Length: 191
Image (cartoon, rainbow, N blue to C red; front, side, top):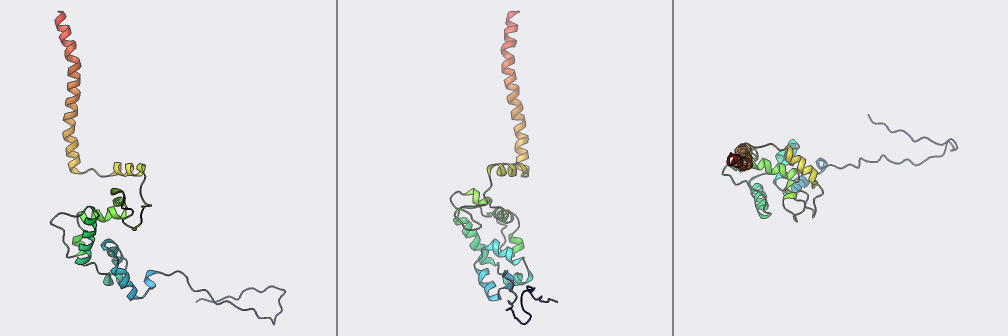
């Protein structure tokens, strides 16, 4: 139980003197959950699909309140297309449920958005996540190189490197043959 303590009095005050007491300050931290449901609905209507999906999965209240239907998904895809950003082009882009929609390339697109990689892909667009003129989360060249080196190699890249190996070995062999041939001919002619 919460109890209020009286402020300590200075010893020079008389006993019959009354000091005005301040009422306790209310908690000044406001949260989204403390807002009325009507405001939740109005806020959710202004969100794009990735933000609405994130809000939807924060609590049970928002899960039943936030709409992430087909119209929101299509509007998000149209906005991406208007900014010349990557869009899922495969035929398996299922708009019926969030789980099916977020499989495959859509999941990767949303991850790129969260990490502000799309802000770096198109100069002049600014921050696509926060909607500002410049992206403050832009990574330095060293960070981008480290991330590129840590990226997973795909199967196609491994096949490319495997096909490149005989070509490199052939070039080395041809260079060695080119230096060896004149010396061999010269020694053969001297006999």
